[in-house]
Length: 179
Length: 156
Picture (cartoon, each protein chain N blue to C red):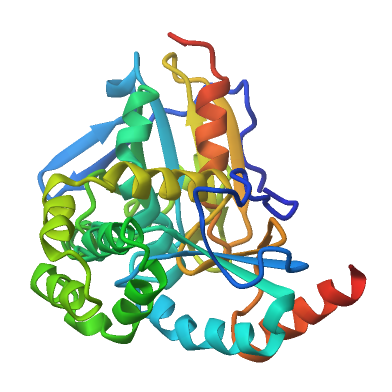
């Protein structure tokens, strides 16, 4: 634990990736949709993505702390249910933009707004179709040393500094120059 | 003060878990135990750390381990925290004589009067198999505990 923890599950086909797949830099976030810190990090990640453009790809994995955030698990499963219909990032963004309204009725409303097949979406949520997937994300985070949210990794190494825009971009800049 | 090392028998303790109940370490003989010493209830880092373990109780159970978290906070403080955070594991109060259990494990911070942020993994015979003291402001996560439990041969 003294050395920087490494991502035990490499970024791969199962992941939701935003940005150029050939990008030099990879930023992975383990996040909880009901966590206020993740909500605060959401626009910062967007700004970082804008700044680094095609040099950065961003991956989001689920890390819901279900006892502290009772709506986090269902929100995570909802984003995965949207992913099954090709709209992961739209759902991810919509949830973070309306964190205070989380809950099943609102998730169903979002699914409607995103023009998803709402019957399939609701059935997926009711069946817990993506619970296992969310659990896999969570355990991969635990194994990689994630101790709270948001938990970031840059090119597979755990990022332990502050995730404000200046610090995070500064570190990414450094990695880019060293690459 | 140095934390007890692997190979050491874990010192026995009896501490309150509720206003009228006490828990002794020896009650857990035959099971593995994860002892989580932490500085204080309600501090943000402890909250995150214990919240993480709270999510992993099934994994710990699958590895035959019970979790006991210990700080010098009073029992009413523990009960309020536990209810607020929906913890499903036991918080023990190392309150009187203050910090005696933390001292026995070599993880008491005399100057601040609180426990270190320290982890001990005990086998079924009550022998320490792994210990780790984290910098007090750093949440040590759970990967070290899981690895330590997995390294212990089955049944021990």
